[in-house]
Figure (spheres, rainbow, N blue to C red):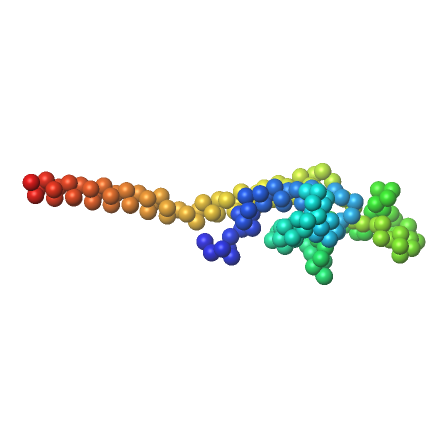
Length: 170
């Protein structure tokens, strides 16, 4: 299978774990969008791994999106919520309350975190996509047992012919 057609779930043996970790962090953190170093710090405690997480986010658009400048990432599902979650009081604001906020206070408003059932759905989806990628990889190798059997048969026949020729020469 060409490298370009391979699933990103197969690029790295830890990829499924990375996707699940990112889903959990991005679904529940008070701010829905951060720079890559911020997510790296939140997910693994090491902002120096920002490039790794950028790659994970870019290769999994089924879950993650980058902003227009391509410097911050967010979880797609969470982007569907309106910005009405006050990160300080951890409450939802009404439209009137939001409109009354100063521009500076609006920076403390994000999109609501996802609930446990939503996070569970995303993790199940990631697990299913990973399983499907593994199955496709196995299916793409359907011909290997046939080649192995043919090689074994060829070896047996060749050995028998050589044995017969040696017997005839005696």
